[in-house]
Amino acid sequence: MSEHKATLLLLSATFFWGITFLMVKEALEDIGVFSFLFWRFLIASILMLAITTKWKEKFNKDIIKIGTILGISLFIAYATQTWALVYSLSSIVAFITGLNVVIVPFLLLFIFNLAKSWTLI
Image 1: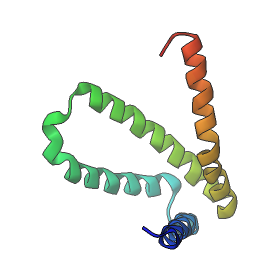
Image 2: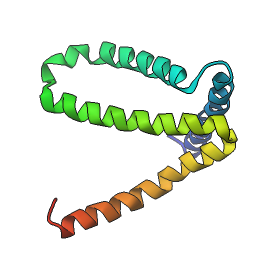
Image 3: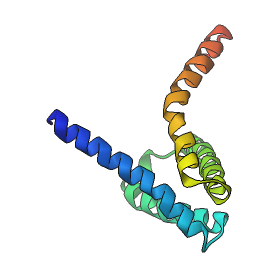
Image 4: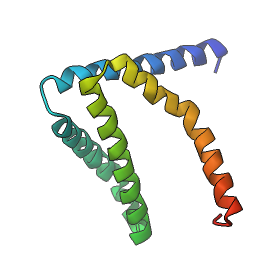
């Protein structure tokens, strides 16, 4: 892949990621935060169920437990972000969300180093 094509794809992904904040903010004027999230997560769950049914034999209780914990964490993150769109500008919410890309690796580095010192990992 050429460098120009990769840059164009990155810019288009950034554009579509950013424009969704405007679309969600507009949608929240007509529907409540948790109604919006219910439909969003229901559609995603149905799609994931359809995609993963052929791998059903690989699921066990541990995978379902971890998936549930991750799903709840993801829901809390989406709920916080979507709730913020009701009370703030979409550009501010997008900026704070984008900061996660920079902050999370450093936060994980700190947490993993702390866990190693406690011999948890």
